[in-house]
Image 1 (cartoon, rainbow, N blue to C red):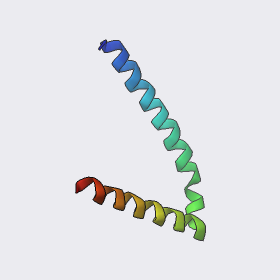
Image 2: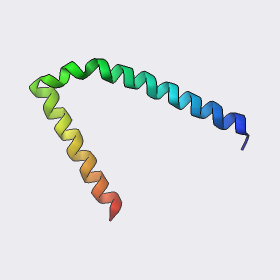
Image 3: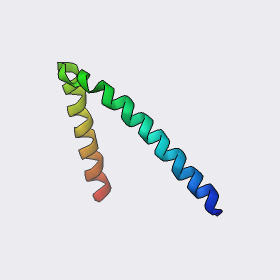
Image 4: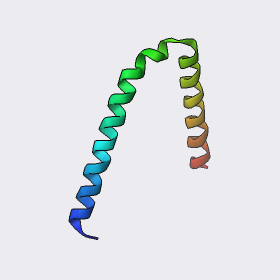
Length: 56
């Protein structure tokens, strides 16, 4: 594998992650609503369940 392709991929991934991070940071105010909190709790529960399945 060419080193330049690797570094270009890493840079593209970091840029995409930064953009998504900024987008999510602006939406943190939505977590103050009941629906937002419920969605966060459901996401946490699903993450925990998947984590348990992966470790078995």
